[in-house]
Length: 113
Length: 111
Image 1 (cartoon, each protein chain N blue to C red):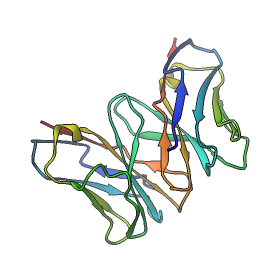
Image 2: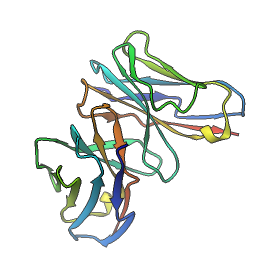
Image 3: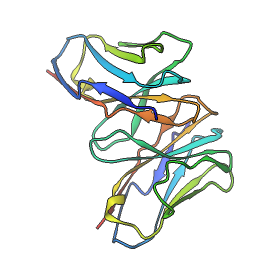
Image 4: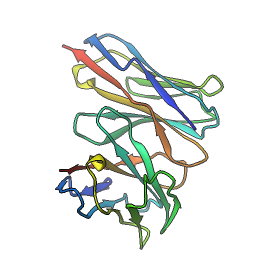
């Protein structure tokens, strides 16, 4: 079946703008994760959903970042008042349930000018 | 906080050579450990998952071992090929249910 998909693949925006990044997990996967990867670094955890609820949002850097998963499938990561330091690749992953193997999407490369 | 370290940061080997990539983690209370491959500008491809109760997993030319008590894992690649060139990342999952990643080992296999 289809893997995890993310849109857009690339997003260029100006400082101060609002952006939304979308993730479509593998069908049937209840757990969904967002990570952020800066150049030369490993991915860093942002937020984890089990079903519709955010089970752990401790990785969100500040209140400009917010994520939703209203129907327990697609998730949207929202960033308000973007800053240049937000530039990174945003990765989404899903797994069948908690502590199972995570499968990653191709990522969205966000560039804030 | 869990910290994951990968050594070496970069490695170049001639084609056909066997090689070992190392991963260490500071908190041994993990549920599992996962090895990934990342090609430039791409997402992560899962290679192997080792449950905390297991000591190793094999897939084709890849073998991953886990020594939970000492906080170490190795990824062994047999008979390396140029197509194996990529960055290899290890990650552990703890009770917090998210993956903690190392910074990766960038592997180059020279034809």
